Length: 102
Figure 1 (cartoon, helix red, strand yellow):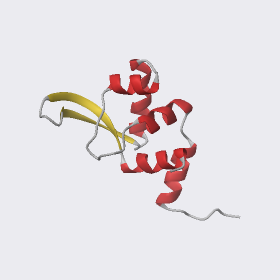
Figure 2 (figure 1 turned 120 degrees about the horizontal axis):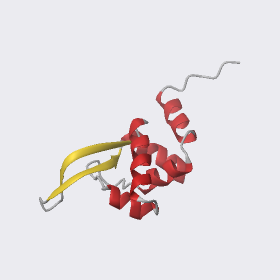
Figure 3 (figure 1 turned 30 degrees about the horizontal axis):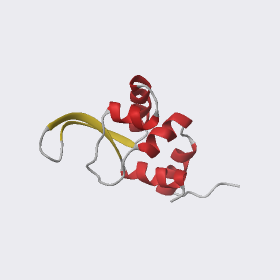
Figure 4 (figure 1 turned 90 degrees about the horizontal axis):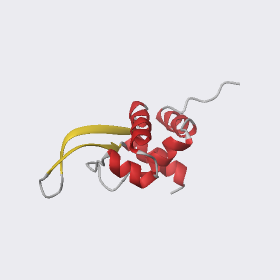
């Protein structure tokens, strides 16, 4: 029996099932308050308890899956230069909600 085509919902469900424990840890740690909220690798390392190098590898894996994105040329809310960072995508937010159960 052929499984039904769930379209985009199927992509989201498959993405949630294919995450490693480290990918899950980073994804659910990324802030979801704002579409323009990006965090540094140091922030990711601190929030997840991973070292910076491991956090970088994992968040880049999430970016390749479309669950996180990288931006450079970022500024703080006060206008100071903040460098570059990673933020969660819309699909990433949905997957994180499925994982957390909210």
